[in-house]
View 1 (cartoon, rainbow, N blue to C red):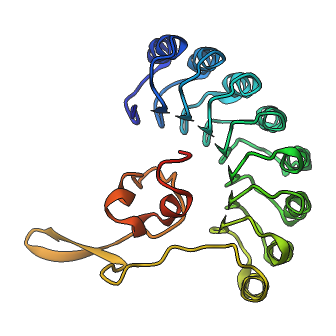
View 2: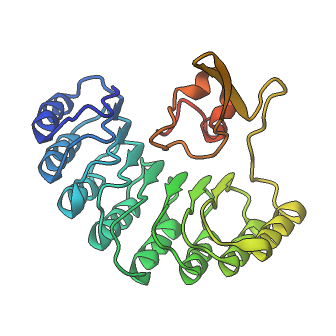
Length: 286
């Protein structure tokens, strides 16, 4: 069920929660960029404690804050059906992020989670400590989005230490403020990791030296990372016409499946539009 951009409020969330509580055969629910707040999030999370049909839930852009997100974290401790949860840009704070890492340490069904764009007011290593511990023990999570966490190189180093013992994560999104030093830590992991297939490092500051570290590691040692390729008949632009004039628009060929302005459905007609959809599989995760 796709209800993106529909001005759904807590009142609408209440009706949806009633549906989910009765285990209606809804497997995917997209509520991105509505007006659901903490109360509506609490109702949805409560309904999912006993739901056995929903596989993916996308709450991105709803300002559920700490109160609502903590309810979802608690739900993950008892729900054994949900496979994908997107709570990016939901005003998560330090407490709720830690709550999610604790829940994911024991949850055996979640395969993909998006925790991007939280509200953090300092570069707190405490969050990364919990994330690292979770990745060391979780043997089911395949996709993790940590974009715009303000992650520093020291945090990346701790994350890489955790990835040494992780053999299931396939997709890692690290759109942060990582520099060449952080890229060096990631390069060392890529020399040995044989599971990771997609690594999103866009919007960082790795510079030439960082690119060099990554390139050497991938070329000489890594055989697991994959990338989408343009078809011969595809180009980087798409033609359109305005007032009788022929114009060209850039076509997105990136890894981000969760762009607000990029439709997931594009991949069904043109796989190169969003390569992550193709690499991870269209019928899985989000």
